Image (cartoon, rainbow, N blue to C red):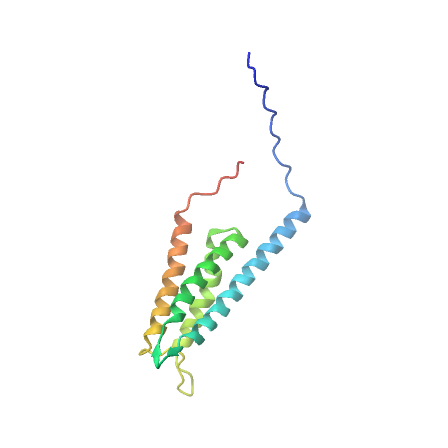
Length: 147
């Protein structure tokens, strides 16, 4: 005979109703759309910062912004959408913006030229950041659902 009282049987939570599921889906879609918008926005900010100079020398601030912003965007996309593949949502528009920026316009203008080490480092650092985030999410163990 035990001196401690028997723990009560924990009841499983009731499944959410249709309104709660619809609201959850809407929040996930909005979170995904914000992640895509964030990918475009940070790409534009990084492209603007790629040419920042101090005393005539490129300082590379956009490389740090690319790393920090892409980590934040990857985390945000995964947290709001709730799926591992969600890191692709900000990565695709970010990559697309970098490809467009590296191309030449009809007038001959180029946002990221081949002789700009900051632009090249920013593309490599940003791409590697998304790649590492995606790889870590693929290798992460599945989340436990029991509490």
